[in-house]
Image (cartoon, rainbow over all chains, first blue to last red; front, side, top):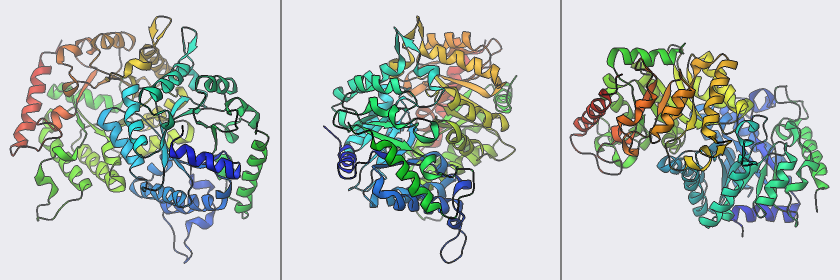
Length: 294
Length: 294
């Protein structure tokens, strides 16, 4: 059982062998200078530059991508023009038939959650599908409105089960009768999927920086699509992902943000041959992940 | 020790006796029809209507308000024009010297958290102060960038310690060695405040729908400013708040959203005498809370 989002991801894997999710986290300093000016020599706003670079990266790497994850924070920082830029990048990816994950990490209840969910899924055109990330801390009534809206849109909600950062130890690893809290979140995810008849619409974020946790998460959630951050700049490697792959080779989206979008370092000036640098970074990741097939 | 945000809140309490936080959650259906048209008879966009009504509610009730909490979701739903409307409402409240809490419930790490924090605190003019709500699930490295930015702006971060919704039982109430997870979050909040020398910049969201938890939260956090949702539409009453007040009568902001902004019901058409209905709702809340003084 898969959502349309899951089906497209799986189709891309079947066709191109790709499980790579491009994480678009635009940082001003790292964007090649040429994007700050238009073809006619005028200067772009910061938001326009973010949009132009985002679309160019997608265009350049699209043959190797199973999904694009857009980090909302960097666009929100630019105010209303930033939100327009985010919509433009999203539309561009959707136009290339690449599934989009809005990395918003929202979490709220009732009509507020409905509004956030509508802001995500309602922004998608009818013939495209998308997903968003959701924080589980507030519990079932904070998660369900997102899932309900995802179901209507044949999209997905990726719950933050176990994140890749060091601070994830603080609360996610607390032990309840010997079991870490994040495992209880994973169990709830499975239970909600059954109760709400929405197993296809619920995915899990599980960080690659915790390889043993990936194995355990797959045991608890044998059929769930995992969105895996932590690869690349955060230090995880292909071998760390083995435990998360399903027997048929499916079940994961491996996100790389900085290492794919700014392989020269996001705070350094981009080299003249930035296009070669991007494709080289993609090929390196493809080669690294190539040995993963079961 | 108080942040400038805390000082303003306390000054308003001293001068006006108010601990009321107006929760602005604009819903299209409940807004008086006249706000959909301008003075010259033209029609406003939805976002413009949200802004106009939000500013009017603040203007009408400002003598009784200790803070204004703006719910970001309903503005985000309207896209870039909605974000411009949020900025307008915020500016209006700040112009009236009312502290603003941006209810964004964000949570992310590193430079992403910095971007979210900058989007909140950077949007404030230099002589005003603000706060935002932050989700603790991802741990210390997801909280700290918000706190660092709040410190620079003399503002505050309200951590979601124990929320007012039913689903808060799912994970916040799980017991670790007999102690609920939310209490461990409260203890971490205190510890981080000390370690980061930021006790003045860290507040706690603790729902009024759990009166016993309010008492316990105050024991763990004797000096922390609590932002208390759940009053009014969610069913909590003044007596439920007693346990959270500090001996000198300070320490709480009691939020009311729907019951103050749409006392006629947020999905019903507003009555002609909507202004009287709003002030009556404020007076009712003031009378109800009046008996709280220690």
